[in-house]
Image: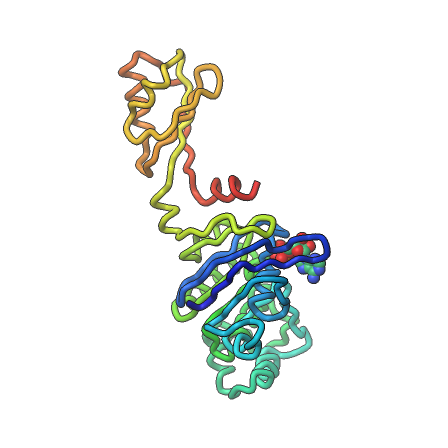
Length: 297
Ligand code: ADP
Ligand code: MG
């Protein structure tokens, strides 16, 4: 296990930022840590990186306890903080050399991480001259210098333009082939684009922990249909794969199907077979987005 979190609670004054949170992450997984602003994502990441101490509960990174083996935990983690403070007056290579000194590692790693993060064309510049996307690469390069097993990335794509976003996500996926990654975000598309698994927190509580694959498989669809006349709900219930039928007013019905196969044709045929006219029909997927809004509302 790369990360194990057991019953972590953290309060700031009267406020519970984390409330009895537990999860574990296997070696090699890329896990999205999803939640609205203020949910407790950064707080959890700071506990894992040993910058905060939890009130109660335990956490281990790479087998090391965050309370008793701080140095080993820090050596195991590459951390990209939420608002990564970079020295704008420093040159890229100078900044990485400074970090290499802090970690007491060979300067030869610098060229390697520059290449790995696609910084080569900008590596002669001052950090202040770089775009936000390239600054994030510098942050990632610094996090990778000591070749940690685990990467903790706090909202790594916030503030990037759409092109930079695609590039950084690609880079994270690439790095994720060799490392365990916990990355926080409040963007669901990001989780779908990058992660194997999603952990959702809301108001300090863990509300979901699911494999993306599972979410895709368990995809439910809801078809909203309006007929020109009343239909017995039990008749609609006879359609294949129906899990729920609800009349939402007038002759409008919300039919939930437990399948990812498009059920609209079946509903059209149903109307035809029962001498009904279909006035309108729309299909919604019950995916990560609806799960998120259900759980964090
Ligand atoms: P997220 O990263 O999910 O947006 P945070 O972990 O930053 O959420 O914050 C969770 C809650 O804890 C917020 O209400 C925030 O105001 C509070 N909080 C975080 N850090 C501190 C701190 N150092 N002092 C007081 N409150 C804090
Ligand atoms: Mg945060």
